[in-house]
Length: 307
Image 1 (spheres, one colour):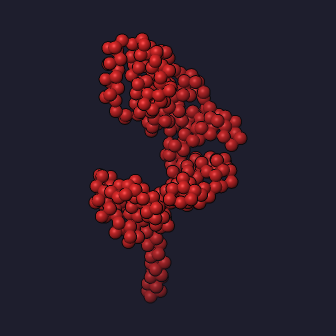
Image 2 (image 1 turned 180 degrees about the vertical axis):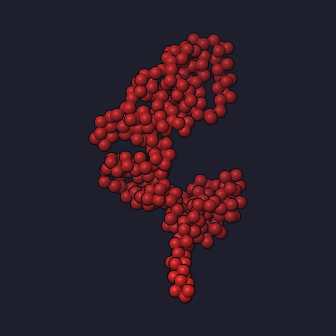
Image 3 (image 1 turned 30 degrees about the vertical axis):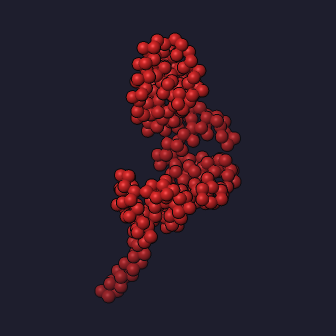
């Protein structure tokens, strides 16, 4: 009996550090109450809850303290203070804080720019499974900034991020295949697969990417009607280049019935962000549409809210 008891005691004693480490690993998985206050715009309440937690060693609270100072929420914007809090969280193993510290070094925010240091921080966050950090690190490898150029390693990281659902990584992979990055031949079909997968989430840039391939017939059969559908889905999110493309298609009657008034509507929406591209068609439309048609389109555009 005694030997059994001793063995159980030994097992429990050995397990305690693992249990403690597991608890510490989950300490920043649960959001402190101050985070809810932050999301609700109650920055004073967020600060009151998060500061003592962060000072006591709560990595998640330290990360959010960094967010407060980084964005100037309830406090004066202070990148130095923000980085101090992000570093505390990062040193405690908070992967998103590690990624943000990497961004500070990459961008030279509150520190001297240092791509090598950025790569080291991204590496730590990526090793913890942070898909955004995988993408950040991939870009350094592809560009050869702070690390030896290695397109294969960059692609491997992007694939890891994409497998975790990172749509920006999917788009990056699509562009690698589209342009043939890293000495590989261009592969429009593979690019189309990545762009289509990224577009499933309804993000404007991804929808625009796949729409252009349908418009050009690259990697997929040319299909103006399908291109117009994708451009419209992107345009509804507020994506300006898609609004220009869609306006042009209504102007010319490509994949859609020719509709100058609808073309004018999409182009005036795009004008604020893509003035030069939109103006090419707007000049001709303003000269050809009636005052009533222009007024209807302009009134409708004022009511537009991105999805």
